[in-house]
Image (cartoon, rainbow, N blue to C red; front, side):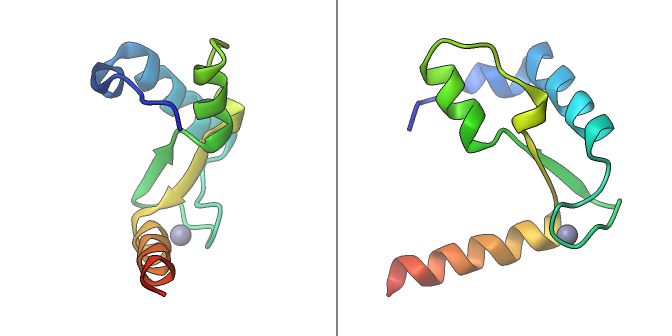
Length: 81
Ligand SMILES: [Zn+2]
């Protein structure tokens, strides 16, 4: 997976991308809540970055913090098996 420059996460580009992603999808993609949302860059955008293509807010994923934690737990469990 492409390494994203840590400075990217502080950049105006990422701020804009998050705002756009939330406008496109204002709710959690898993449970549908509109609270406590986080925007993930998404695998497609990692690949686009790697290929030198511009990032696209349509490929961002919107998820709430509690679903994100659950998903991360599931990933940890899978990694241990
Ligand atoms: Zn959720």
